[in-house]
Length: 365
Image (cartoon, rainbow, N blue to C red; front, top):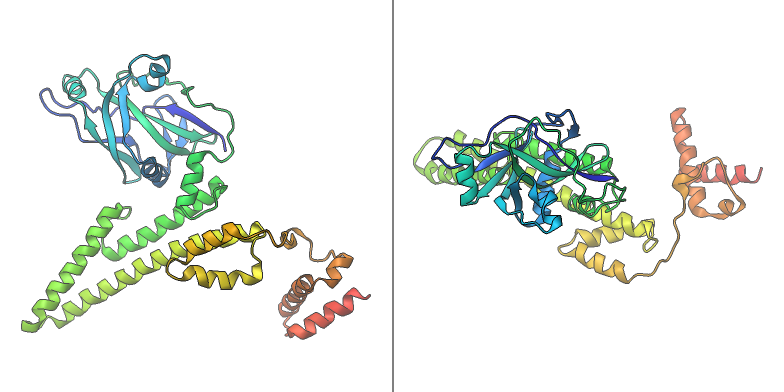
């Protein structure tokens, strides 16, 4: 995956407040996507959850400086003070917004209209997928074509650290490609949208809003249950209880899907490494499903030797057999299952024993 760093101004929305007033606490960093275009004509693809997850993984605030001084001045040893700090990032209506803790000096400069615009600094792939936000700069020339920053090498880097971290956070293998990462993010977004629908809140609401909605629904249900003793609103209470039960079920399902994805990723990795066999997958899966089981399996797998090489059956033409294949029960079983499927497609039911006998007879011809 190729990674580059760029800056851009996406709109003319000024951040300056009226004279004597403080600058806005929340600022728009990226407009609604997925396809976004800078004023100088460059295009990128925005998946807000990628930017939000990358910010969380950074585990710290990001600097807003003056005229991108961190990129151009700091490498030369010239002071590049911060104008503010991005302390929180969230998705809003398909875009990305940041909560900023402005410095007194920057607040005064913005109030006096010395600076009016904000330009984000971000990493992206060669195909234009925005990977993470690095910070932003206060600027005054929105018509200027901003060149790509050079402090991060534009040479190709296979599986950059941030991409690995995002993949791991999604329960994927670290070498997952962009397509797999986007598919996982889309699946999570669909699940979250379904939950928001149950809670009757805006689709794409942040986790804090979802938690607040669940808490509110639970409080309403408990209040209704407490008052039902002296009222006749049994139907209303029953409806609230049903909503709460559905929400709890949906939450439990989401949590189970996340756990299942992590377990499958761990099992796939160890099978691919030859440390466990496909036949033992169900047993290890049951172990991982127990409380603390995934951690115990990960620790155990780290001590296991490689016991078998990959069978390469997935990459082999089922109609092509070797002498070794003729004796391999795994190959025979695979061919028997294929024969069953072929006959079933013709409307003929064949038992597994008949299928195996057919394969045995065929290999002797």
